[in-house]
Amino acid sequence: METTEDLQIGQLVKSKAGRDKGKLFIIKEIINDKYVYIVDGELRKISNPKKKKVKHLIIYKRTFKEFEEQKKNSIKLTNVFVKKLIEPYEK
Image 1 (tube, rainbow, N blue to C red):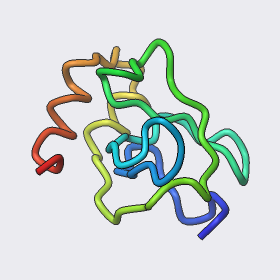
Image 2: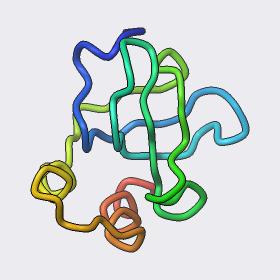
Image 3: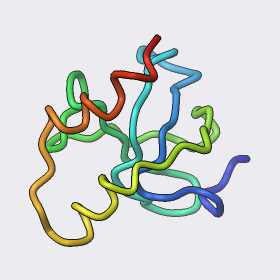
Image 4: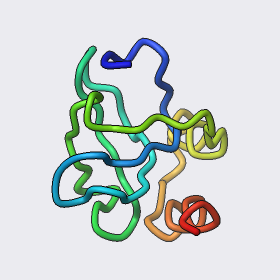
């Protein structure tokens, strides 16, 4: 998969290239068919998301509906919230 067709906001992904290789992130925003913004609440905070090519990501089926709903309802997302969502999957 190298396009954003099957991606959703709030979906869990893992970087497979770059300095952040092997790190888990959540998709914050889909920019276009090849790029997304990702956050992890620690290195890449909500206020400073990482622009990443989709082809450099491993896509997981896990989607955090809570993340998507908070973003959709204009509820402020926090870095602590994002970290808590990712934490169980880092093992």
